[in-house]
Length: 183
Image 1 (tube, one colour):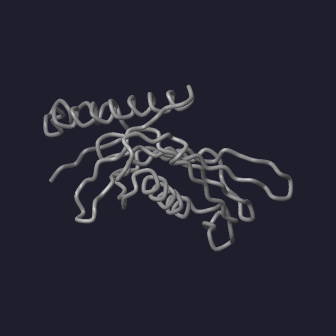
Image 2: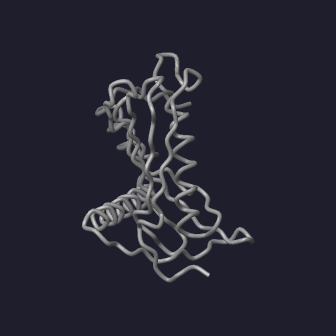
């Protein structure tokens, strides 16, 4: 049985991996898709560790690629639960790369994944509440509330947007570098 509340620190997890030539894209930098795969793995591990259940990725809310990662660098990913709902959690992940020859560390990526806890029958499972024990943890939780509000607003706007109207189509052509040619 899960405790009623768990500290953010109980969800903390980190992984480090040396970036190999097989992880590179055509420009010689580490492929973003490879980093996304690692991000999904650590989000799963973090959410499962915190909830005590199998977890699935509900959405990848933000992936900001800030700096390229080079072959030969040591990549470290640090994840923690930043927000909990009833069965969902928002996992924040920070990615840093270290040049192992010079010791230079770069912040390369910040990501947020929404994960959902599942029981043995595949139904949503309740997650423990979150104990926030630092102002940084409060800041991260507050940022998640903003993310959730923006997502709800975006979904509401989708319901009211009429992409069929002549006004919308004319406005799109006028304000963007597009030409609309419908059959």
